Amino acid sequence: MTEGKPEANRNDRAMRRVRMWIVVVLAVLGAKMWWQNRDVAYAQPAAPVVTFGDRVAAIADGAVLDLAQVQPGDWETAHVVGPYTTAEALQERLGFAAPMANAVCTQDEGRQSLLFVRGIEVVAWHALPRSRGDFCRAPANERGVARADAKFLVSPTEDGWRAFVLQAR
Image 1 (cartoon, rainbow, N blue to C red):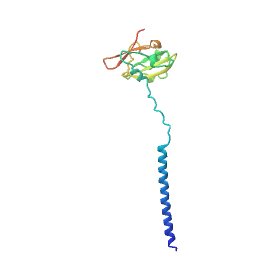
Image 2: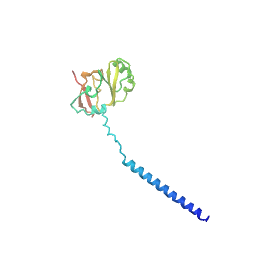
Image 3: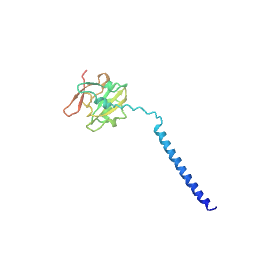
Image 4: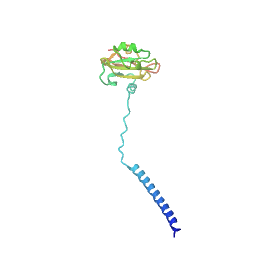
């Protein structure tokens, strides 16, 4: 009779292992079914972010770009900072020390920045590739342009860029 007991224990252990694996498989399958069928409050897809450069590039040739429409907010003057402008020259033109002067001034021929100023504070600025729209034409790149006067005529140029020329008042 002692011989039957060890074999019965072996059979019991084998059955317990089988039962344990069945429970594990059922638990995994149940978890998978729950995961796949759960109610998820899916987020609505976010609206694409339209950048300042996108709004400028969307203006058709021959149209007039009103910077007050493209750059909303409370600003009084816009300043075009073309390539090769030094931080010192920019701060002299602004009449105050701008903390981002070194960041917006560049030696890159294909880059410009537009600064929007209220009083003695830069309230917004955008670095813009000149290939998206070239604002570096006189007189806009020589002085600040008042918000009411910041209207630019869009015209293609021979180099393939689009020139934004300040309209005479």
